Image (cartoon, rainbow, N blue to C red; front, side):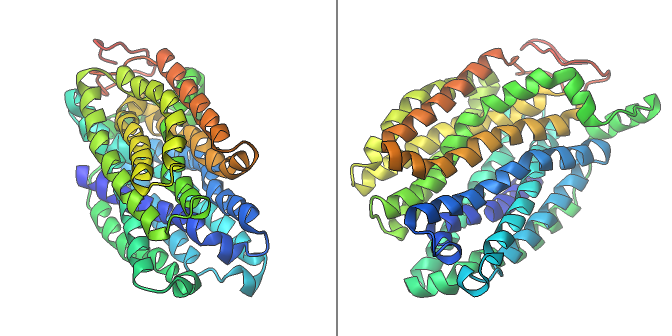
Length: 433
């Protein structure tokens, strides 16, 4: 159960993140050579952001499948979908060869990746959460979050090794394609693991109950009718760590190599260090969420992030690679604390009959705001106002996230064994159902 969540999410997010690394390092030259440095970077990150526009739709589509057919079906389908799109990206000819068709193909395939990952995280998180004991649910449900970090680690390591074993010209000509094509082997392993898992007992019981009651409403309609406020609050609560993650792990790689003139290998090594801190703090975040509560853990990380936004770029701009590592590690440390709580609090917020849809829609709406917009506007903001302009944007997003947590209900210790369809209003000491 834990292995299915961890291994599968690792592979899916490896596929998702290699695109981000390639968008930062080579796509501006490969697919947008005529636009120049700043416009090429913006166009490259715009194609990266397309996936975040697709994620809410993926959350709805695959959430519906998860709520109506089963969590397992969703996990298998999203992995296959992601693997095919990733391999095809690795086969797209360069812009100089086929012109505008190349970026159009990138956009279509990146959209497909977004659909897949839009269903992946939510399905993996609630799959593990519905199996886990309630007193350790945050720790058990951490496996998809650790899989996300492991996917970033694996994608960064793959690009680092590929780049170090060939010349820059070779890497930019065809070497960057190797991490994308390598996905085929990883997906085969993931499919083997996921095909062998069983459906969660909670979903099975809920499906049988719904069958007896002849429920005909769609999960999305039930979600919007009963818990639309919770969708908005949960979405806002995760914006901080998603925006800090993609700035700290994706945009900073481009910023460090193009603005600060660090080498590609230096920045990839910095990313590896940052991911290590992210993993450690993800575990700490989950433990704190189980002991102290969901709200104080994720809310505290969001509040601290407001101040850290103004520390990040002074450290990065020092020109010292060690201080750059501190900047990235500190950013991903806060990300880890908040993300380690998210896999528990969001699934716990929604009723079983539409939990997959609710989790997918809420998380992916937050991903669209926190993951798509900051990397796209980062380069224009820095060009217009310098790094302080980007710091202000990050601080505002962190403040919004902290405020949203205030209005969310505490879910620590609740039961997911709901027996009736009603709005979910929980307290720390209450069981739902």
